[in-house]
Image 1 (tube, helix red, strand yellow):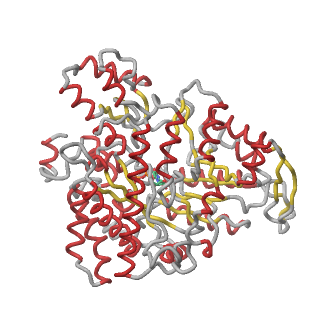
Image 2: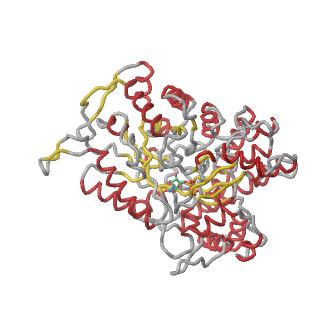
Image 3: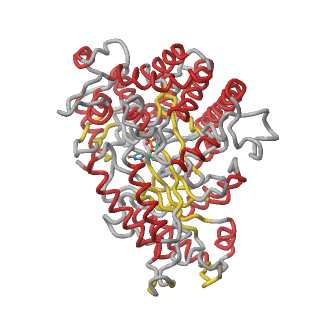
Length: 581
Ligand code: UDP
């Protein structure tokens, strides 16, 4: 934190921003004039957002000023932040939407495909990410009646979406992120699985295979399963499930893609089955949505929810949850949706996704190693508390403002008197908002104790974990030489001059065995209505068989999806260990 810049920006008191936070805010969040100069301070940004979001209260006859103050306070104290598009767009008068997550349907016609392409462009312009299920598209080689030609298949169309996103990215505030899903029984599944195996192809996509229970059973028994042409509904071929599964593991080992979405598990938790089936998730997998549905997310910073004696302050968390649910529900009302279809289904279900960030920081402050049963227990307890209180808040809002229109016929109709929102909780990656808040991201462990961070525009930021720096100073083992050594390796596990107990607490993503990553994802998933964004890190020397164990474990533990990242397997990494400098 640097006092000088804070004074200059008029934020001497709050928010307590780190240098990295200010850097990110200045580049991408604070409003600029035509010359590209920032024309608002961080405090003014939070005021702009608080005021725009609070204005929704007017409609319900509640106290707008009071809501604005509590929204402003929670953001400027870095206790709660909404997803980036809300910070970018609220109160700017640009008519840009404020949600991070969308799913668009892709119809099996040229017109349908290009309509979706256009809609994608409109969403990416606002900073939102889009997921697509390409499974309705007829397979490559199938007939095209109108032209007497042959169809080119889902993967070829994905390339058009990817190229369009590249072009939009160059003008936008952040890279457009996309998720492509293909059902495992689509005839082009093998082409899809290998579609990202070469470097620098489809870079704007995460890809995930939608694995059905039927397929997973066939994998376990080593049986064949049917591929179905979506245009005719006919079985066109059989494949051996284990062979397809192995292909997925090989490619995930090589490039991190494909991930898997367990589509039947997702639909067992679809809150509004009468409104349609869920086919896809947003780009990072944490938000399953119906076609055309959007969702806005927000995250509470757990590292700011600790009492002086180092305990979790549950009262404070409860207040923060209620305030945040109020905030996110308001976003639905003031959000200028990019399409009428999105507007309609989003307002019918009123999904919101409240989650956490700073979980790893919290564990460190409480002296709990991330890879321990105590950490799993705490994670589960926090998730359960969030779910319970967020539902309470949504039920209270329902009494004041009405239930969500699709409530009757939803899975909640016989469990609740009435809810304002079809879903309330989601664990987001919080990739950028955690930098703004100066905390660890989502429920991820620390990536490194010190590292270089790549940010948009090619800049690289050097970071030492502030909690570690403080402990090193307090316990008298701090030295510049030591910090440089840590930056070189990222991890401190093999640095003998650091006390054993400190090494145990500061475990990083790569020190932790992949099984613990999955267990933590599952612990949070157990009490999260939407899904959980989690990267399962694997060491560079792990094998496709290691990945297989992880994917199967995620399925057995009832995760809604899984993504792995083997160190060094991707061309471009957002975070680099010091070693790579
Ligand atoms: N997202 C996106 N582009 C990005 C980062 C995120 O479209 O560069 C979308 C995507 O849907 C992702 C969601 O925003 O799943 C939430 O990501 P994250 O929590 O990292 O966003 P933040 O609010 O921190 O910017």
